[in-house]
Length: 225
Image (cartoon, rainbow, N blue to C red; front, side, top):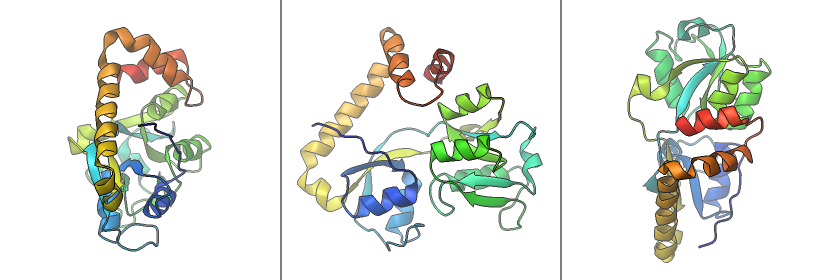
């Protein structure tokens, strides 16, 4: 198969376009699939019973990152934290981390802002519009190098967590079983390639060609993570 990668700015756009068949496979948070199947997604597209996850990927390497003035999670009381969408995806991880540190969303201990995907949330945090957000590698490393504080890694608080998955629409998958299997095989081979020490330098060179502000030092830190 030939894979064409299409970026999406946030999960609402991603799930809306996905439901309309604008792409075949969505690399997304498993929470999005659960929410949209159940009709609880943030986009007004109704229940999407044909969506399903066919491959687990990773825990999303989530870290709670805050502005330099925030020294502890408890300091986020009365502050604004940003999410992609408020009712799907990693928002629930963020709420649980804060809850376990005494901050209750339903009690109004903090404000929630919908800021979009990873790049948009990092930009909002960097510009001082919000006090904290969840970032994945390499953006948590980019943030730390810019003087921001990594308060905690999500898996240290909530434990093992299914983050990214490959999702498909059931009718398409039934007609394209060979393509789905080929995608999964290729993805696994790519992950195996990344873990081979001999590929380290090439992997870091690939990484440096993509995210903005990616220095060799940050690529090294990302590779270790």
